[in-house]
Length: 92
Figure 1 (cartoon, rainbow, N blue to C red):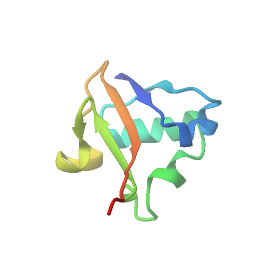
Figure 2: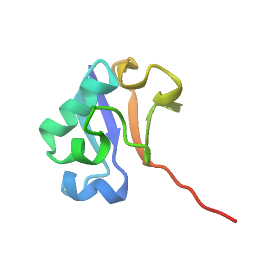
Figure 3: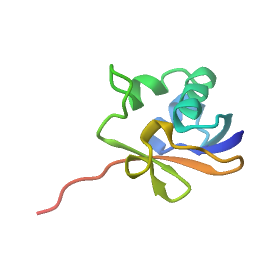
């Protein structure tokens, strides 16, 4: 399944400045694995040592946060967009 991955500015050095890349994968885990294979360095930034998503990064399949779905096993239909976003915190 071919999907588009949106890459936030902080991670674009890993993709030679590209804001989006195409990879194959049927689940979020497969998409992230393909992203790592095509652009080494993503796994260290997105996954913990035990293979789960780091807390400061959110991953969306279209507009749905995978943390509220099936996590890394969330299905990724052909042609959708997977967005990687840094979590933002702060305020007063």
